[in-house]
Image: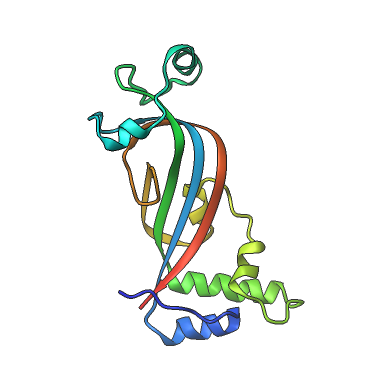
Length: 170
C-alpha cells in the first residue's frame, strides 16, 4: 500500500473515497512526561542516556505512584514517552460520519477534514480518540515514540501534546 494525498474539501473527499479502493488508518498518540520502566532491562546506549530516578525521588515514586505492573527490582526513568493507538477505519462508516458532519454544518461553505477534526469531541486518551470512528484491528502501545511498545509500566505526570491523524492508502 502506498500513502495517498486526499482532496481538501469533505465533499471531494467523500467522492474520492467512494470511487477509489482506499484503506483508511487512524493514529492517535499522547506524548507525556512522567515515570516509566522498560520491558527489557538490559543496559544499552539508550538506557545510559535516560534520566534514571534515584534517592528521594525514587522513594516518592515507590510510595505514591507504584501501581499494577510496577517492578521494584527494575530501574525507574523519568522522560517523555508516547502512549499510542492505531486502527483500520471502516470506510463506509467514515463516509457516513463525513456526510453527517456536512448536513449538520451547512453554514460551512467548503468544509475540510480539519473542520471535521475541530468539531469532534476528541478525547485526549489515544485508545478513546480512535473510537470517534468505527475501527477494527486496533493496536495499542507505550514507548519512546509511536509504534514502539517497550515500556512495561508508566505513570504519566503531564501531557506534552496529543494528536489524532487519519492516513489514506491505496
